[in-house]
Image (cartoon, rainbow, N blue to C red):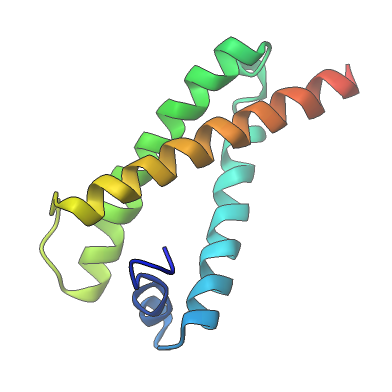
Length: 112
Protein backbone atom coordinates (compact mmCIF):
# COMPACT_ATOMS: atom_id res chain seq x y z
CA UNK A 1 0.00 0.00 0.00
CA UNK A 2 2.73 2.44 0.92
CA UNK A 3 4.68 1.78 -2.27
CA UNK A 4 1.56 2.30 -4.38
CA UNK A 5 0.85 5.64 -2.68
CA UNK A 6 -2.49 4.49 -1.32
CA UNK A 7 -2.05 5.59 2.31
CA UNK A 8 -2.74 9.31 1.69
CA UNK A 9 -5.82 8.27 -0.29
CA UNK A 10 -7.04 6.20 2.68
CA UNK A 11 -6.37 9.20 4.95
CA UNK A 12 -8.48 11.38 2.67
CA UNK A 13 -11.52 9.22 3.57
CA UNK A 14 -11.64 11.18 6.84
CA UNK A 15 -10.31 14.51 5.58
CA UNK A 16 -6.61 13.94 6.29
CA UNK A 17 -3.72 13.64 3.85
CA UNK A 18 -0.65 12.06 5.45
CA UNK A 19 0.60 8.52 4.92
CA UNK A 20 0.90 7.83 8.68
CA UNK A 21 -2.74 8.88 9.16
CA UNK A 22 -3.75 6.63 6.28
CA UNK A 23 -1.84 3.75 7.83
CA UNK A 24 -3.58 4.26 11.17
CA UNK A 25 -7.00 4.47 9.56
CA UNK A 26 -6.31 1.33 7.53
CA UNK A 27 -5.25 -0.55 10.68
CA UNK A 28 -8.46 0.45 12.50
CA UNK A 29 -10.52 -0.68 9.50
CA UNK A 30 -8.54 -3.95 9.40
CA UNK A 31 -9.27 -4.65 13.06
CA UNK A 32 -13.00 -4.00 12.62
CA UNK A 33 -13.12 -6.18 9.50
CA UNK A 34 -11.19 -8.87 11.38
CA UNK A 35 -13.79 -8.87 14.12
CA UNK A 36 -16.42 -9.04 11.38
CA UNK A 37 -14.99 -12.40 10.34
CA UNK A 38 -14.16 -13.98 13.65
CA UNK A 39 -17.27 -13.09 15.64
CA UNK A 40 -20.18 -14.00 13.32
CA UNK A 41 -18.38 -16.71 11.31
CA UNK A 42 -16.57 -18.58 14.10
CA UNK A 43 -18.58 -21.71 13.29
CA UNK A 44 -17.12 -21.79 9.77
CA UNK A 45 -13.57 -21.58 11.09
CA UNK A 46 -13.37 -25.18 12.29
CA UNK A 47 -10.33 -26.33 10.28
CA UNK A 48 -7.35 -24.75 8.58
CA UNK A 49 -8.50 -25.77 5.11
CA UNK A 50 -12.04 -24.52 5.56
CA UNK A 51 -10.74 -21.42 7.32
CA UNK A 52 -8.41 -20.61 4.43
CA UNK A 53 -11.27 -20.84 1.93
CA UNK A 54 -13.55 -18.71 4.11
CA UNK A 55 -10.73 -16.20 4.57
CA UNK A 56 -10.02 -15.97 0.84
CA UNK A 57 -13.71 -15.35 0.19
CA UNK A 58 -13.86 -12.77 2.96
CA UNK A 59 -10.77 -11.01 1.61
CA UNK A 60 -12.27 -10.93 -1.89
CA UNK A 61 -15.55 -9.59 -0.51
CA UNK A 62 -13.79 -6.72 1.26
CA UNK A 63 -11.69 -5.98 -1.81
CA UNK A 64 -14.90 -5.47 -3.79
CA UNK A 65 -16.67 -3.54 -1.02
CA UNK A 66 -13.72 -1.47 0.17
CA UNK A 67 -11.39 -0.90 -2.76
CA UNK A 68 -13.88 -1.00 -5.63
CA UNK A 69 -17.03 0.51 -4.08
CA UNK A 70 -16.75 2.36 -0.75
CA UNK A 71 -13.43 4.17 -1.17
CA UNK A 72 -14.11 5.33 -4.75
CA UNK A 73 -17.67 6.37 -3.84
CA UNK A 74 -16.51 8.44 -0.85
CA UNK A 75 -13.72 10.05 -2.88
CA UNK A 76 -15.88 10.78 -5.93
CA UNK A 77 -14.02 8.35 -8.18
CA UNK A 78 -15.48 5.81 -10.63
CA UNK A 79 -16.63 2.56 -9.06
CA UNK A 80 -15.25 -0.84 -10.06
CA UNK A 81 -12.03 0.49 -11.64
CA UNK A 82 -9.97 -2.61 -12.42
CA UNK A 83 -6.34 -1.79 -13.19
CA UNK A 84 -2.87 -2.87 -12.05
CA UNK A 85 -3.40 -1.16 -8.70
CA UNK A 86 -6.66 -3.02 -8.18
CA UNK A 87 -4.95 -6.33 -8.98
CA UNK A 88 -2.26 -5.68 -6.39
CA UNK A 89 -4.93 -4.64 -3.92
CA UNK A 90 -6.80 -7.90 -4.57
CA UNK A 91 -3.67 -9.91 -3.77
CA UNK A 92 -3.25 -8.00 -0.52
CA UNK A 93 -6.87 -8.49 0.49
CA UNK A 94 -6.72 -12.22 -0.30
CA UNK A 95 -3.55 -12.61 1.77
CA UNK A 96 -5.13 -10.62 4.62
CA UNK A 97 -8.29 -12.76 4.56
CA UNK A 98 -6.39 -16.05 4.49
CA UNK A 99 -3.96 -15.07 7.26
CA UNK A 100 -6.77 -13.62 9.36
CA UNK A 101 -8.79 -16.82 9.06
CA UNK A 102 -5.79 -19.06 9.84
CA UNK A 103 -5.01 -17.06 12.97
CA UNK A 104 -8.69 -17.14 13.95
CA UNK A 105 -8.81 -20.94 13.51
CA UNK A 106 -5.72 -21.30 15.71
CA UNK A 107 -7.15 -19.03 18.41
CA UNK A 108 -10.56 -20.71 18.31
CA UNK A 109 -8.99 -24.19 18.51
CA UNK A 110 -7.06 -23.06 21.58
CA UNK A 111 -10.30 -22.01 23.28
CA UNK A 112 -12.10 -25.31 22.60
